[in-house]
Image (cartoon, rainbow, N blue to C red; front, side, top):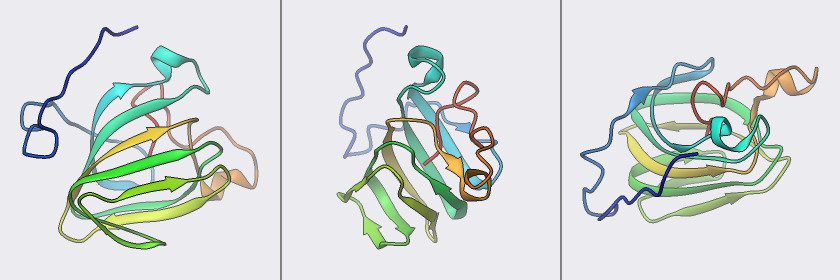
Length: 140
């Protein structure tokens, strides 16, 4: 397990020192991620958290949340089925909810997943999660 992490001044540009990697998962175009903790730390169906960056024009396919998901928009504007969410928005997605996401101009947000998510097309057949939370952190 990782030790304590401190990220200061997160609302005023304090993310510049973080290392983001391309989130190379199916259905997630233009997405970068900085893992805070993931299923490597918590177990195969455990919680995960990350700071996620959507480049301008990023798109994420519809996916389903078997557990809660919390999204806090730090910078920019996140767009999903519920509308446009500017910096300072907190969204709480309950178990069983689904959405597709994107950002026209780019955004950065904190996301906490209670359980790994599945692309909607895999949920009907109960296939393995489309997002490998052991490789990265679960998807937003």
